[in-house]
Image (cartoon, rainbow, N blue to C red; front, top):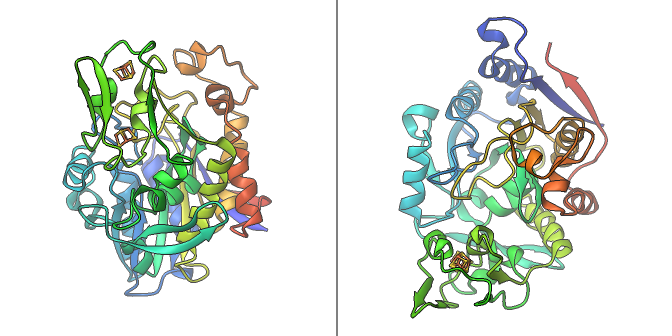
Length: 373
Ligand code: SF4
Ligand code: SF4
């Protein structure tokens, strides 16, 4: 049975050792990264850089502890993510959110190049076929996946599986386009963006959010560049009126997350990937949105495991026993103690990600939870 090491966010003593950074340091020592990393291994610390207005990412102080623990094994870490908006702009977002070489103690780089075109096609599964894995992640021998646990409009629950699946692949492939990248998960069929003139109030939020300037309103009529569009779905998510949509399929999406995770993990030898889930600042939406909402569940703590499914199941189990926070989206939606908060918020069958990951052999649901002393 896989072990999941856990440190609670609660502070019982006013000492550094009992702080979250102090507990993470102790958790990393107890887990012992040297069992997984070899001296001189280059190690990707995969996280999400956030967006200009979404500051609730895995904080730099935590990434610094992870980097220091990797350095103590003699391995060489770098912090990375794939291109979500234009590459140079995304590096600036990382910098604004506090992620830079000085703060985290290691280079902060893009895993798929400045243009997000630097990737390798890897076999994924029945739904995706092949998917464009970021070349840096493809080549590096070891990875520590640092995931901010939160909600997600399409995935319902977003943790390590989503971080690897959506974040380990590029938005598009140089030749076969968005269908071989992240867009192949977000959209089905031709994934065309459909505008509903009746619902649209011309607020222009969709135009503002598009990372590629695909959307234009001319004479109050919507147009977008089908050729350039990545099918990232941001425009559909920010529309307050439901005036813009892109065809998707919840079941296929959940399965494709597992397939893409499998593709990314297939580029590593066994026991070369470690997962750290941060159950902190659990906001209702993804870190790529233009703003971070207040958390819907109080900080719970940090988990480490070498089993992808176990850490996800343990994280979900803790979320299921946590109360919704007042003055949050959970209260707006009248979610009560005992309810599945993320399920009530997004109404998505998020357990399918886990079940499909088990079916694909990415880990096991049973786990032993080891509390930090
Ligand atoms: S899905 Fe929408 S926001 Fe994303 S690239 Fe296409 S038009 Fe732009
Ligand atoms: S975000 Fe929605 S309502 Fe606003 S301009 Fe776009 S389609 Fe219209």
